[in-house]
Each structure stands twice: as C-alpha cells, then as structure tokens.
Amino acid sequence: MSDFLVFENVTKRFGSLTAVDNVTIGVSKGEFFSLLGPSGCGKTTLLRMLAGFEQPDKGRIYLNGQDITDLPPNTRRVNTVFQNYALFPHLTVRDNIAFGLKVAKRPKDEIAREVDAMLDLIQMHGHEDKKPGQISGGQKQRVAIARALVNHPQVLLLDEPLAALDLKLRQHMQIELDLIHDEVGVTFLYVTHDQGEAMSLSDRIAVMNSGRIEQIDIPAKIYEAPRSSFVAAFIGDTNFFDGNVASIIGDDYCKVESTDFPPILCYNDKHIRPGSPVHLSIRPEKMRVSHSEPDNSSGKINMYRTKVEDAVYQGFQTRYWVRIGEYRISITQAHSRFLLDFEPIKWGDEVWLSWHADDGYMMEQYTETDEALLMLPPESIGEMDDPVPEENSEEPAEERAQ
Image (cartoon, rainbow, N blue to C red; front, side, top):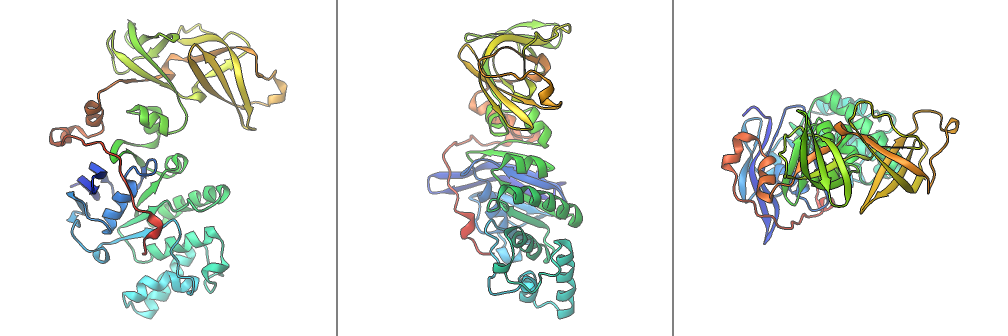
C-alpha cells in the first residue's frame, strides 16, 4: 500500500447504531489530515479505533504497511492529544512531558535531552518547573502536544484539541500547530467539527456525515467543488437553488429553470443534459449587490432587481439578505476600499443582485446509493457493500485517559 495510514472498509456499531459505516481512507506520511463533521458523525470513533480504544466490527487498519487492527493500544506508535489536555496536575511541565519516557525506562540523559528539545519546540523554557494550574490554557495545550510528540509517534491524533480555548487563543494555536507540524514532520490526524480550523490547517479533509465519508479532498476543492449538498452546506455558507436544466448554451453553459426563481445561467462542467434536475450552490461572497446596473458585456452575468431585506455591518465586510420569489439569498461583500468614500447600501434599498455564471456550482440530484458511490475512489466502487444509513453514537473524548 502506498498510503502510510489506511482505514480499509472499516465499520463500527454500538448495538443497533452504526457509528462508522464502511469507511475507506488513505493518509500519506507527514500529511496533516482532518476528519471534519458534526457531532455524532463517527470521526472520534475512527480516532479511537486507530488508537486501539475500540475494535472495528469489520475492516482493517494499517500503519506503515503493518496491520495494527488487533494490536493493544500500548504497542501502537500513535499518541493522542485530548480536548481537556489530560495533564497530571501534581507534576511539573517538565515531568508531564517526560512521563512517557520514564514509563518506558529510557536513560536519564536521553530523557533530559528529549524534554529540552520539546521545550524548545513549544517555546516553554522558563515554565518547565511550573505545574499545570500555574499556566494558561494555550500553554497547557502545548505541553500536551509535547508530551505526545516526545515519544516520536508515527501518527499524532488530535481530538478537538482547541475546543476548550477562547477564539483569539484558538486562532493563535492554529498557527502554532501548523508550525509544529512543519517542524516535526509527523503525520497528524485531526478531529474537529470546526470548518475554519480544518480549512486553515489541513493538507486534506475527509468530511463525514452519519458514519460515512461524503468527500475527501484538499480544502479548496471541498469548498469550491463540493460533491454533495451536505458538504456545500457544512463548509461555510451557501445559497441553494433547485431546478432543472432547461437548455444548453454553447459548449460550456446551460440555463437552469426553477418554479420559484428566474432562469439562471450556469457553467455546465458536468455536461448535465436538458431535463435533468440539479441542485445549484452559490457562495455568498461570489454574489454582488449594487445600486447601479452591472456590466454584462460578456453575457455571462446573472442579474436581477430586488430589495435589501437585512444588512449587517461587520467591519471588514457587510452581510446582506435579499429575497427573490421564495428564496432568501445571503450575500457577503468585503470592504476592499475605504467604505466611507462610497454610498452605502442600506436596508430597504432597491438593488441589483448579480453573479458570474462560472461561480455557480451544480450538483446533480443523485439517489442515496449514487451519492455514496461518488465518495469512493473508482477502484473500490465494485467492492462497496450496501450502505446502511443509521444514526450513530460516539463516546465522549474527554473521558479517555492517555
């Protein structure tokens, strides 16, 4: 196998509840890979199976070419960083980091050397003699990461590691995590429900829903080219339009008609045929509202007259909502120029709503089975079992001990 870490057709059930449903994932060595999804989607259960805290009911897990499915947790070269840090409150920072090395009975000079290297990595020299109650939340998280990395794991598992921090500290720790990953080069498997964290940190993301993989891709493709309406809705904000392809225009475009919205010109990259139903996603930042009529010399601009229902100023941007037919549409307009030099758009204003035909992303309305097939690599489609979509359950990550 070319992938460093592989989940192969893994299924895990808790009674009648299916937490992980026939999941196949391949992670490259040194990759920062995120499992992203809502609570209860199965992401933490996957992490627990890799760590050895749970056993899959079906499927295998491989690490560096070795089948580790049945190995006990203490023999797997993986370490976990938990949401609640799980530091020993009676030990100093230095002793917390050294704990695993001492348990392994490593020589004292080696322990001192390795701990000093970790203190350098997390920039905690000067705090090594403090106890966890004397340092900040961000510092505790760095100590927890150092304690996991000092054992030189092949994979570092991070289970919602920033969830307990406030917004500013989370943003700062994202940068630090990225730097630490670049420095040590260890494979990171990161579990989060926060789309912003996953998008900013990951080399690739697996979006999970009800125990299944909806899409695995780089962040840009997850956002710009979602394979399902769930992915489009879960990653950021979007506007959905349902309709049918009415006609093909040229080689690359089509007209989509809906009973509740005027015709929409859209880039037809999937070559969907006339008469086919489609689900159209348009991100709020792709749309524009303006007092003046947009330039449509290219003939590829969708433009409609409407009225502003709501406007919320947010400093770096303003969010607008307009209504056309039954659709309430969200628009995000960045303030790239000095705003006070321009006439602001206000609640109740008559405006033009517009967007380029290339900026709408069409998804065919597949059946549930077809949708599941799209999520798998082509070579594995013939091997896929019939999916069993059920609500799942995960045990709380914070109750685990390292």
